[in-house]
Image 1 (cartoon, rainbow, N blue to C red):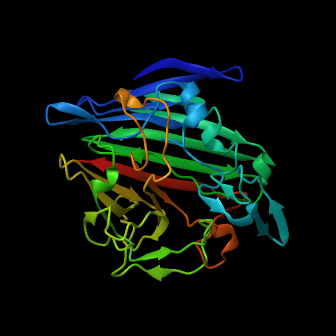
Image 2 (cartoon, rainbow, N blue to C red):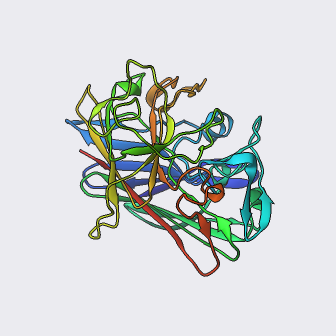
Image 3 (spheres, rainbow, N blue to C red):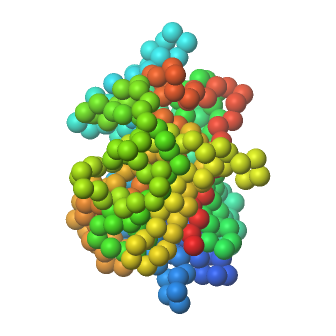
Amino acid sequence: MAIKKFGQIDGADVFEITLRLPSAFTAKVITWGAVLRDLIVPFRDKSQTVVLGLNSLEDYVAYSPHFGAIPGRFANRIGNASFDIGGHTFHVTPNKNSKHCLHGGPMGFSKRVWSLGETTESSVELHLDSADGDMGFPGNAKITCVYRLLPPMTLQIELFAQTDAPTPMNLTHHSYFNLDGSSDARNHHLMMNAPFYTPTDADLIPTGEILAVAGGSYDFTSMRPVKNAAGALYDTNFVIASLVSPEIGMAHQATLKSAQNGLTMEVYSDQPGLQFYDGAKVNVPVEGLNGAKYGAHAGLCFEPQNFPDAPNKRHFPNSILRKGERYSHKMQYRFA
């Protein structure tokens, strides 16, 4: 484990923590946004960077579309930037050029400096305090994120939260994955344990329906290329059907495989949904890791989470965290 200064913003130092297993499986985490900046998989006598990342704090602040971050207080979208709790309507801060709230608003958790907690050679703990009224959300909330490398090649992320008043809480991880460094990750093959999805309107707010994927462009129940003849694009919540294993406390949500080099990634989580985003709007004007250019579809996002707009859809899984409760989310990205 190594810690070094990565930059400074608004007078606050930002640090980079390098985690490593003896196998050379390596993760680099920065305290701005609790971002996973790099993830290096030892592979066939070489190493493969499998996430999109940037080279400076300035580049992250100016250009990052949530690369590797922990969004919150509510990851994904809240329709019309409002919700009701106990008969009271709360208005949260909408994002720029939108009437909706995405990833906690324009200054959500992915754009904050987190404080550094306990570290080991293979793990780091990060903390964030979110005050009552932060981006319009009620209640004082305390957030913890733990990155942990597990042998042989698993990245485990644990997210925790507590509050002193009822508030929506939905935390996830937002890395863009590319297993072979190709310019278009849609050539990867994908399987998801998801027989249903939640369709959306033109603003990507769920309509409230839960529809079957069978036979259509949303059907990834067997392994197939992400790119398809219909030209379908994806920024979609899929409903996970596989059961949480009592042994590991998570369910197998998805498997991604590079058709080019055979490297695979399995996604596990204890959450009911998986947001799959194909990176269609990625357009970063500066160099990424190893000199890479990140254009459309340069990486694929797999964000285990509750359903989008759950605070406004009473038939969706509960998303309100209350005083005395503890929000907990555990996920794993396993490489082979």
